[in-house]
Image (cartoon, rainbow, N blue to C red; front, side):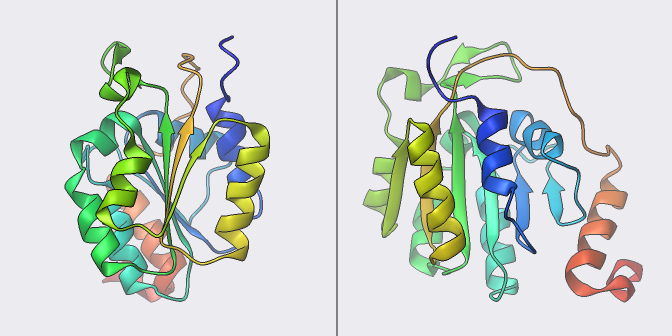
Length: 196
């Protein structure tokens, strides 16, 4: 082990007190990690749309301002969608929390190094875009502080969590996109919404 945080333990800890928080997960490891913490009708794991998790979270946060929206994404996906940081910072929804699980690798395509392995500072980019709250988390105490910030505070918050680039067994959410969409809509809007 590298001494870095273990991403599944981090995700499980951050989701433990979730209540009715809406959770978006980018494709690949973030989706497997939220599912490992417990499949939930208020989870919306992406099976595709690389680069889109943060913007989907923004849309959801604007549409559901009374609910916390927690986005889990990877460093590779966040690097692909850097423009989202500026748009999110301008909109500044107080209920949006972006958590980047940064293993410095493209985990779905062969574990090639991402730019964060060479010093690219995603939290610094978020700060420069206008996020009032940014964190780089490297320790368990940092995870505890982040959890408190998410559940006791108000967004908009961006956290870059340095995690071990370990390969883990897949824990897959349902693969049926219609099922995921309808389940999530019904949980957020009520059973009649899934029929529309």
